Length: 233
Length: 233
Image (tube, rainbow over all chains, first blue to last red; front, side, top):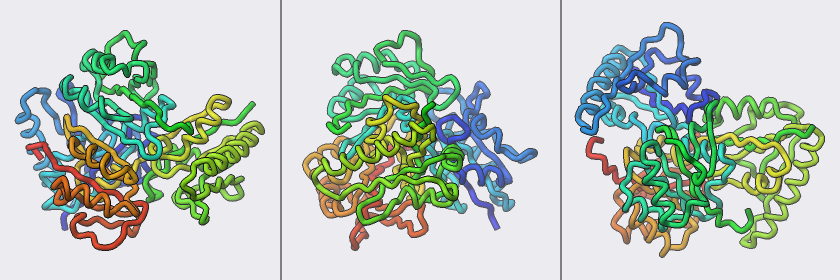
């Protein structure tokens, strides 16, 4: 009998923000798989490090850094094939995912390659969006407010258009897109409502008004624009 | 010295989807507070029931069901005052929140009344949005896709407008708004892309194409519209 594939959300970074279910499944997994950036870092493995059983088999899927998408997809092909071999041998495989597996995660590329052939379970995790709101002491959305989540790499014109009509906004993966985003928010007169959050839930977490930010942003950073339309707050 | 106020996200319903941090803080809290609907149910307390220490002090904040907002706000006033008394006595108070405290949660009404006077920590939780995606085996958003989260009570014209320009959409709190939402999606030609998820992560969870739904929806239900624009998926 084949093993089960688990896509496991680990939350935003603080290992204590993983769920009890993630903890149980990782502790008991036969094989642990995770993506690794070309430079050799795996944020997902870092979050789960204290829970991975000693001596467990590990599958590190190295994702090449490239604007072209084909090389990364070839890496997922190879990773999926390694995982399939383990599943065929009756082993359960836990794929570690920072945040949530289906929220801007790479797990979906393994899921699309394996879920039609193997039993698969997806374990949701805390996303960086609510972790940033918690860190910033900023309620995201009350009652009938609409929340729009925007990836930082979006081009300026589309970003402006998306933010213009929105109520509460979270802009993810700020990194090298910081200047573009700041300009868009400034053009919309929203700079004073924007909060910048870096590495939410980690020890070196940082929260400041976007208007006060002077240094570059790392990849794991976010901008929240919450105008707080609820008169009762 | 005053105690600390904790706003604790418990996740979507399965007690195993609470975080390790939520588990630790609830286990060690002096006082447990939570909202209760007028009829006497507290979904938050249900999720945390197995973790609440025996004999701990409990503050149940009864929220009147009313279209008027003032009665609920009066209930939060009274609840905040009870919590303040406990904090003044040096007790730590854990406020139980289904999902995430700052994502359509009632905790923000306690936070706005207490956080300027007391040490406050917000613990993010898994939201129903990613829990529904996990249950439905439906990736929410890849790469540069925008995710729009829409509350079901929004009126039809605004809802149509919000969904029209959107990529991935999650419509929360469907309940008695089911027919309106189905009509909006049908008008936009999106019915075939819509998945209905009820009570995600609970034992009686249910996932079906929205087009096949014939019976009424409970409050804890969601509709996901994910067109999957990523050609690599």
